[in-house]
Image: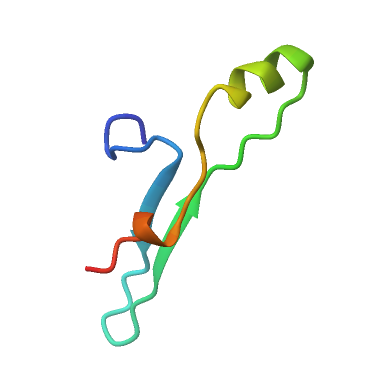
Length: 56
């Protein structure tokens, strides 16, 4: 979904049921597989707080 959202680790999706739609927030969780990758991920701030939530 590169370029579709401001955050490439998160997207909002929904089912197309017209009477009972369900909205999903899908987030990618990065799990380092090597020491180098762990160091690279440590440089980013991936923390989410209540202030980051979209409430409409």
